[in-house]
Image: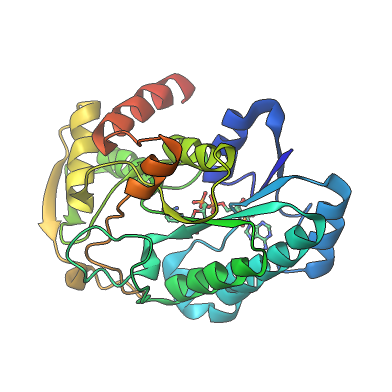
Length: 278
Ligand SMILES: NC(=O)c1ccc[n+]([C@@H]2O[C@H](COP(=O)([O-])OP(=O)(O)OC[C@H]3O[C@@H](n4cnc5c(N)ncnc54)[C@H](OP(=O)(O)O)[C@@H]3O)[C@@H](O)[C@H]2O)c1
């Protein structure tokens, strides 16, 4: 059985949909990964063969003022999961982020590139990447710019703002790949089924800016909202962000055969599905 920790979250929900009978989800309050006794109790009772950790403190700006909570959930919590999965002989898949990089490379990041986080969230996720190594049977999956049916995300924010305003200003100097949580979930399952270990990048293919992503959302939904450019510096958020953090996913394709689809095609499919669900 594949246990999805953080199973009520945006990624966890899609992963459980795809896993069907193979999966089981747990989340707060059934498990609290910052509490070793809780992790031990749940994992020894359920005896999974694989644990996928989708639980995280994901508020990037909130992490700047809640350093201790960020380190507890994203760092220490992963150490507890690694210790207990090693004890029970289970594989641990840890979901991480492009924010472990500083965005200064100028070309897509490969798995072995040197991390240098710019913010507390990135530092805490890097601590998680290091702590997962306590279990030799681990996979680190770095991803980026997620959206999906079951959580707050950029697509939902743009669709809401687009109803309220004729004109929006969106940053155009951060580059990445918008990634549908369904496509990421397929990548995670492919890595598990191929018996992979180590670090992998999983993101939809191609790249754009947040501004380009917003334009695509309005174009695909036929909304007339105008999208003006602005810089990251002008936006002045509490956490610094990497400017160009596209992830090279060649290792994923070489080792599993799975090739994530172009981000624009994924967006189109997501919007069709969303229209049926909402
Ligand atoms: N979202 C992105 O754009 C993005 C980009 C790159 C990487 N990632 C990574 O992808 C993974 C999934 O992200 P997501 O957006 O799906 O996250 P999400 O929707 O915020 O889901 C995280 C889940 O974990 C739960 N959780 C929080 N603290 C917990 C704890 N101490 N013990 C157990 N469960 C806990 C949350 O519960 P509550 O809601 O009750 O707190 C929530 O259900 C994370 O590792 C994240 O760092 C996300």
